[in-house]
Image 1: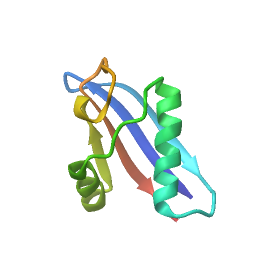
Image 2: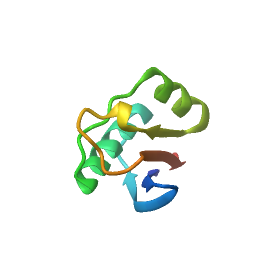
Image 3: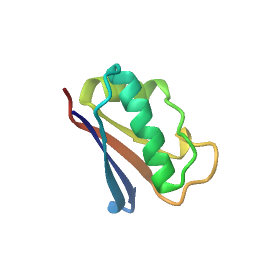
Image 4: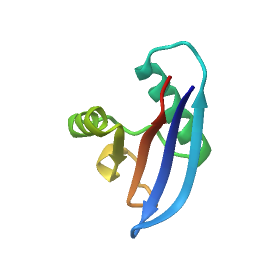
Length: 88
């Protein structure tokens, strides 16, 4: 079981959160990308861009923050944070 927790924050307050589960037999990278797509659909967001700093943080901490720099359109929050909370 793979589970990813996503949260939107504004002024250090959580606005929304969701947990995405994935039982497919794919690579971890594919599961992360599929989960992020699902989060964007649920939160009605465009897909964020993975910057080099975002990738290195995610590899190191299993957590990443997507700020306005990661999005093309304007976002109504400070950042979107994703965190892997369970892996097979």
